Image (cartoon, rainbow, N blue to C red; front, side, top):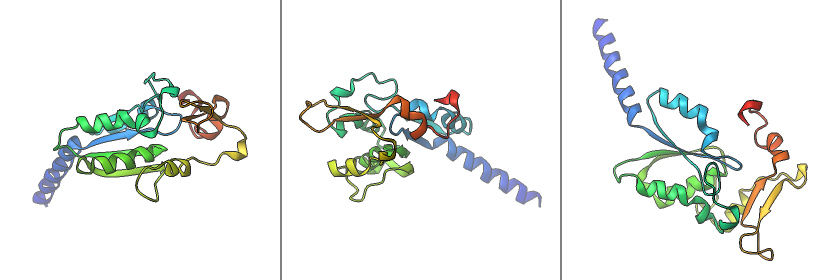
Length: 185
């Protein structure tokens, strides 16, 4: 019995050591930013995991004007830059929420050797596996029951399709943060 306890302790130590090498990269969804992961990040880091939270362009603390984001590649550039900067030997667990699933898919295709696992948490998953304009349209949830919920941006001009969409502030609590405590929103 004493040997078994010792073996368990060794196995537990190895598992804990592996946890310290596990790097999670968390990607927010619509209306979010890296800030939306703060509680999960703290819990994960206290368990020994490395956690990086990304602000996509124009979200969170990134002060880019939404009108300057003309395509999905522009919006997703901070994640692509982050993935590019990772050492070639590092593999991350990439986690996306909501529209962050589109970003996870794009990063998975551009950096397959740097991704250990892709996790979609209530996130958009693509039929084709590639981010096309149609995929982005298909990934937009139907909020028609609420009326006009989006603030649209037209970075390419009013006669062109919108280049950005934000859920209007008055709808965010009802549509995006309905299960969050008031102090978290």
